[in-house]
Image: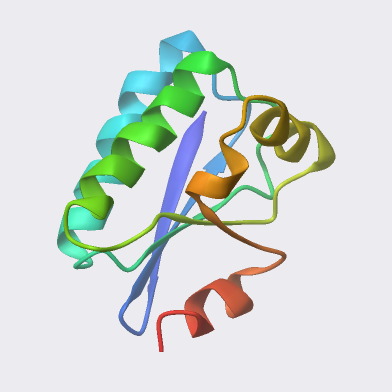
Length: 111
């Protein structure tokens, strides 16, 4: 898994490329937390290139969301495929995140 980071205005986009499983989850969590701190909570995970996430990756998302929550923010996700969307819904986690179809909508939500 590779994680590309792009800053557009005041919003940081993280775009992991590849499945996120146990071995990659720690790096994913670190990247999320670092980006959230640098961007004052204006962070979006673009999941368009993630075919699959395991439970450790979901935990990394929750950790980042909890960290943002302490500052009154919510982690924003965009570009979820059907598998990841269904996984979030089945685990009851979908409501913990702001989910958008695309990055433009996610970035505009910070206004």
